[in-house]
Length: 425
Image (tube, rainbow, N blue to C red):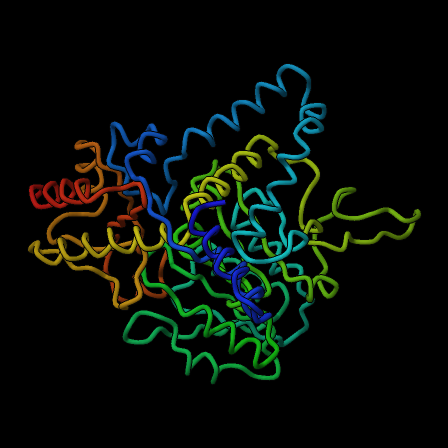
């Protein structure tokens, strides 16, 4: 127990008659306590920091050494004793996956499923809903491209209506227009918390409140927010929440997760099942398992699952609020620096921004700029206009440069990036 937590308990127990509400507050107080990040230590535990400026964390972040070690250790065990036998020996590590995610998202372990990536998790959630002709799905105009394709596909398959709500002048979904769009036929609101092509943070909690008000299912894609923003499924009022392991969680590629609220599990019909997700009662009947594991498959990359669990534990020990504050600080420093450079247009509009910053630079193509930065050992990425047709396509921005910062990045790296950006013509 940390000294701060110990002091908290001491203060409470020393009260002559402590009110019950104090005890109720303890878990959230502990979860939200601020910690100081030891950046030097963190960077020493992140080998990639020694030779690159990695500003492509929204694509895939640099893993801590402990995550890589956990994956290799299990693969080595599989090599020695066999895959099934290794999984049996690693039972406690696999169980910790659900424990760690339940703590991270403030939910129950039974509401968590391991999925191989966030897109598959998102699809499993959408396709588990029972759709009827004329049902309505609402999304925003900055929805992630793969998700939007998925919505178009299900609208065509199931003959349901897809409504796209515009964003307001601050680049976030218009809550007024969203609420106006809800009808008796509205079954699902699907929202991406932070779009891949812009770093504005969408008002997910407000959207969740609207969904709850009208008894509409709410699916939140947190692919770019989980690991850099404190996410509480109870505050968000979401029914589904999905995310990726390789981005801000700093886990292995080919990992993801799905949260599905216990309250709705009985109403869902997953489209795939095996002997892990369902039980075979007799030759003509079966029964889904009564937890979010109904979305899982027995065969999975066990080593990668252990690696993701290790990554979430690493994050938990640092403290998500300290991480969020660190990323916000670095983002502010970068935006201030970009504003001083000529020919740079930052695309984010809101005051509630993440570690993702997108921009264009006059007279240079985004791909060429990325390649020139790579020559200087700086990693950034490109968001294609074609993959964001409802916002970048409408604005005719062309492809844009995306910089995505993580807590292990430094102000010195930001300065070096700005200098390189100014030099490239």
